[in-house]
Amino acid sequence: MADAAASESASGKLVIRNIGLMLSGKIEDPIYDADCLIAVDGKITQWGREKDLDTEGADTLIDANGTTLAPGLIDSHIHPVVGDYTPRQQQLHWIDSTLHGGVTTMISAGEVHMPGRPKDVVGLKAMAIASQRWYENFRPSGVKVHAGAPVIEHGMVEEDFAELAKSGVKLLGEVGLGTVKDGKTARQMVDWARKYGIQSTIHTGGPSIPGSGLIDADMVLETGTDVVGHINGGHSALPDDQIVCLCENCKAALEIVHNGNERAALLTLNTARELGKLDQLILGTDGPAGSGVQPLGIMRMVAMLSALGNVPAEIAFCFANGNTARRRNLDCGLIEAGRSADFVLMDQAQHAPGKHILDSVALGNLPGVGMTIIDGIVRSQRSRNTPPAWRIPEIIG
Image (tube, rainbow, N blue to C red; front, side, top):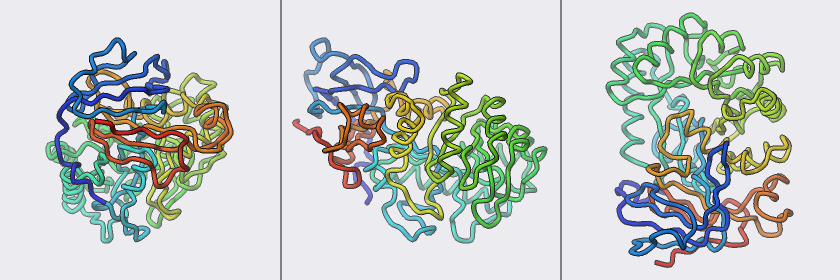
């Protein structure tokens, strides 16, 4: 469902008090000593102990009731088409459902499921610009969808990338999903894209849909994209030695997705940890896809990586917000002054084992989402998709 507030510009003062635990999104400092946060006109201004902050004059006052506040989760890898509909699974309101899983921002890896997707240069540019525009103008349930990600095809020249950038396109779809499947040509186009401020990602692993193909470690390294898309396969992963090679040699973001190989995901995590590269890990779902839509996919990845990868839950959450924000150059995902006031408030699920929410997540359990906030505006309250939380926040003014 579309939120009528999605197009509003946030105004006024938001105060969230009685926060039980504040996660920062910063992998180097994941937990803040704070119980209150203030945002003005949709931007974070202050946080800390309530007694030390100016909480007077709030236009919106939220009592967190001891729940955990974290930056809204970010899905680094989706394949949207138009609005809140996906023809891939004939499903409506999948973005709204994902909001109920704590995700407030989504990033397109290409609108490849559009029926009749044009592959000629004029057509692919037109569709990319249109996609960027319609998600800029319409935000399903307030969710920020960064879309308009053309898949590169043979015949594109530097001027095409300059035109796309001038028109507002900031992303490339997965390299390898189009006709360009050799590293030399792909590298030239990725360099053109980077010259004009367009970020790139690459398909990694075996083919996912008809028309895609194998992209091995050699091509990933030669192409030099900003993001190693689904390093754990989408769906089929590369052999272990190639995944290790990518972790060792890439300075790019290493993207682990829900719709991939879980064993390869853990191999990536363990290798990145050994190399001191946990700051390069980011998360996506790679949905909608043949395996469906995963409204809780990012939350499930956080719990899985924490539980099976022996990563503290507060660090695993950073893979899903702060790391992605930094790698994707977003203004959300971190508790910092001036960043967008995009949050998820959550608590330990009822009757889930664990002493507290972080302990419970580290045991592999999903938390219960009680509220999402985007640009300082409440977008959803108790989640209809997560297990019910013990405590939920309340709007009290």
